[in-house]
Image (cartoon, rainbow, N blue to C red):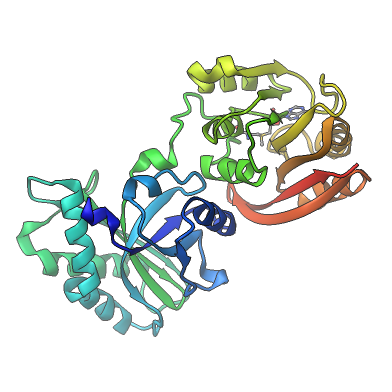
Length: 363
Ligand SMILES: C[S@@+](CC[C@H](N)C(=O)[O-])C[C@H]1O[C@@H](n2cnc3c(N)ncnc32)[C@H](O)[C@@H]1O
């Protein structure tokens, strides 16, 4: 339909640190997309801004994104003073782009009643105004633009207007995705150390999924990485393990009908019941600190596990490993002469910085 085929500026919201991986996924899926570079790395906050003319439906299938927004207003240079709020309010009340985007979305949503809206304000940086001031400016802008023809609500709005003040930049987007993109698996069992699906997807993406993959997550917890690998398409063989019986049971429950495709077992990552050189991909989110087990257990686990990774991977095989104890992980990788680090990505996991290493078996 015509409204879906005009180039617009979008932004994907992902976890901080995953932006470059999301941009790689966007480029691979939609080669005509172009990146906009006006957010600074420091203020990136998980946002990837790009122009594209693909359909909304296609955009919503991006796996490493948590949400997709259409850009509806933008100020490249804020003053950090109260004048910013007046400018933001005016841009929403009278801006041409805000009008165009809400018009396109109104026909897309096929609304037959008075539209509802809510505003969400996000702010990072030392501005003179607060997040609450920003929220008020966003609400006033929308109210003045649409008067009584739009109604403000707290939940389940037709239009979610998100205003991001990220240091010197203001970026306003209207949310295209709903919560099912972020919480796509509806994991029946939610364990405390579960990964966000978007981060699990980013790790699987970095493993370069192939139909002939022999894939293992040896510390699978609630099974998020296994679910994401299945979502990426065909896989020759896929298995998951965990040392805790409860986690294996949680993964089985969360896999639901897909559990038939996955071999699951309870076992120790220090002794994998797997033949040498039999796997092409290992993707794993390792335990760290006090999160699971004691620090002493973790200290012993890393070198022993990496020796197993080196043993069970085929030459050319890849391991994508995430930990918040990245120095310990890097040291354990370097102890294995047959493993080489190809890439590293620092990302936010459960409020801490962690690092993903992409490792290749070379000989
Ligand atoms: C950070 S969690 C993984 C979370 C998982 N990615 C998810 O989304 O649920 C680490 C997992 O490693 C498991 N684990 C700890 N020590 C292990 C070992 N020696 N062998 C196998 N699994 C182990 C823990 O039981 C835990 O489930």
